[in-house]
Length: 306
Image (tube, rainbow, N blue to C red; front, side, top):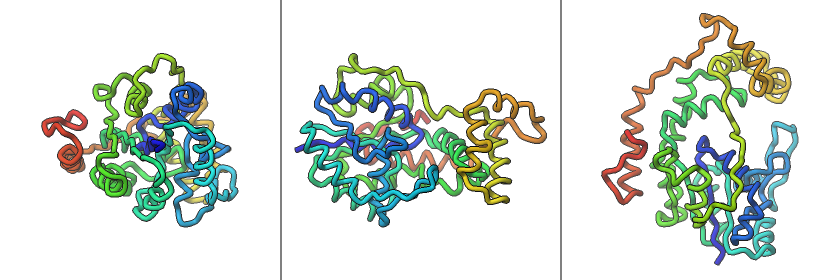
């Protein structure tokens, strides 16, 4: 039976860099008996299997807000099965951090992958670090919530116990490979840790010369972007596509524009996020202890070195 390593993130654990690594090393993976399928990877962003994550939703169409078009995803899994059969490799890696947390949708995913031996590979990041990184990413994607508003809406994303319970209920507790995204917990770098988790111990042939992606601009630039988003998207109702063209891309990718934002006085745009996690830290620790008790053999360990 073909084994599928289903890498589900989580987000903000080096997923984009890791996915680019997998793309760059497709031929080496193939020589070792591993397929990183082209099926399920969208043409406009073909590094990860976003189309598979969206194909399990009730509507088999997906709206691409970058291009303003609808994409039919009804044949994504059929294409995947045919590619796996055609390539005739014993192991498959599927990677996407956008798989749903909806049980019915994941039941559809389980059904679609039922012909394979599925191992679910998941990376967990310390809640505070995850939320900070995810918040910055949300501003880059057009949000204008302040940090506390964002956290209060997204706390479910860092409920790792519920996340793991959902996946284990469908794919089996023994089929979860849980890794901690902390330097002292990884087996080498993220590439080596991922490959080891997928059963590849000798990593010397792999090309690990991958530029880091989703590098965040200075905090003041992020705060300035939030202010601009609140006006252009929140009040003027401009589309995200338009705002990317007008100013978002400039502040994300241009050092000159970032330097311009840094000249704004601090009393107008702060250079800090000014947020204290103390109201949430005990809940995070309690959740992490439940994860340790349920999914790790050593009960004395700490998940993130608390």
